[in-house]
Amino acid sequence: MNPTFDHMLSLLRASLNDSPPDIPLLSTNEWEQLFWLARKHGVVTMINDAIERLPDDKQPQGDIALSWTLSAERTRYHYAHQAQVLESIDQKAQAEGIPYILLKGMSLSRYYPRPDSRPCGDIDICFPHHYQQGNTLLGSPNAPTEGKHSEIVVDGVTVENHRQLLDLNYRSQKKAEEYIWKSIDNSSSDHFLPPMADMVYLLMHTICHLTAKFKLPLRNIIDWGMFLRANRDTLKPAECNKLLRQLGMTDAFNMLTQLSSEFIGADLSMFISRPLPKKDITRMRELILTKKYLEPVPKNLPVLKYFLAKIKRHWQRRWLYRYLPSTRMERILTVARRIL
Image (cartoon, rainbow, N blue to C red; front, side, top):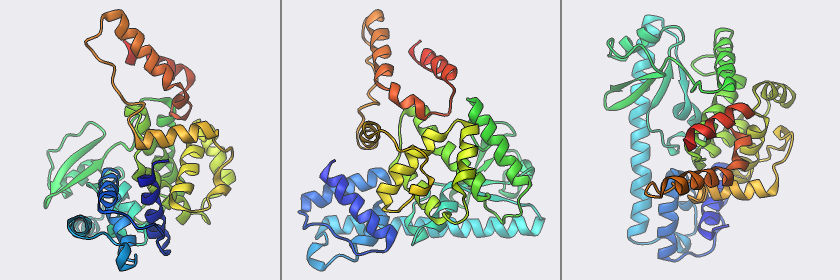
C-alpha cells in the first residue's frame, strides 16, 4: 500500500479511537503529501486531532503545520454555523409541530469522538409526509415539488429537504426506500432514522457512488464503520443478514464492513457473513486511492475502436458489479446503455 496512505490511516485510527498516534518522523515533503491526500479524502480535521497529540519533534513544522491548523479551524467553524442553522430549524419545527429526520453528515457526526471534526457539506433533512410544509419552514414555499429533494439556502448553509431518500434506478433501491419509509412510520425515534433503517439508507447511499461513477470515497467508508461500531449492541447480525438477502445487498454490506473495520481499527467481524476475496480487497483499495477504474475512453477514436475500448473498460470493471444494487439483468442493461 502507499506509505502516505498508511500514515494517514494510522493517524486516522488514533483519532477515531482516542489512542496514542504512532508514526515515524516525517519530512516536510511527506507532511505535504499527507496533507493533500487527507484533504482529497475529507479527513484533514480528524487527522489533525491526532497530530496535536504527537510529540513536538514529530509534528509538522512551518507553513505545512499552519495549513493543517487552518483547515481544521475552518471545518469546525463551518460545523458550528451549520449547528446554529439546524438549531433554528429545530425550533421552528417544534413550534409548528412538524416532525423531521436528520440524514447523512450531521446525523453521522454524533458517532465521532469530536462531531465537529467530521466535515459536512450541507444539511440533509426530511420532513416525513410534510415535504411542502418543510420547504415553507425553510423559507422557500415555492421550491420545486418534484424530484428527489429541494435545495434551499438558509443563512448561507445549503439545506436539502428530501422528498425521496434514495435514487430509484434499481429494484433493490425501490425496496429499500419502501422499507425505510415503513420504518419511519412505525418509529418513535426523535429526529433520526431507526438503526436498521439507517443501516439500509447508509448502505444504499454509499454504494450509489459506485453505481454512478465507480467511486468509493474514504469518508463514506469511515462513516459506515463508525455507524456500525456505535450500533453493535443494537443491530442484530442475523436480522441484518436476512434483510440484506431480501435486498440483494449482502456482498456490498460485507465489502464496506470489511474495509471500514480495517480503516478505523474496529472489530466488526460479527457483522461479516462472508469475507471478501483478497483480490477484491486489493482492488477496492486501488479504487479509493487511484483512478485506475475511472479513466474515460478517448472520444476521438474511430467508431469501432471506441466501442471496443468501452467494452474492454467494462470488462475490467466486471468484478465491481457484484457489489452494485442491481440484479444480473439490470447490470447487463446498465452496461449496454453505458457502452451505447
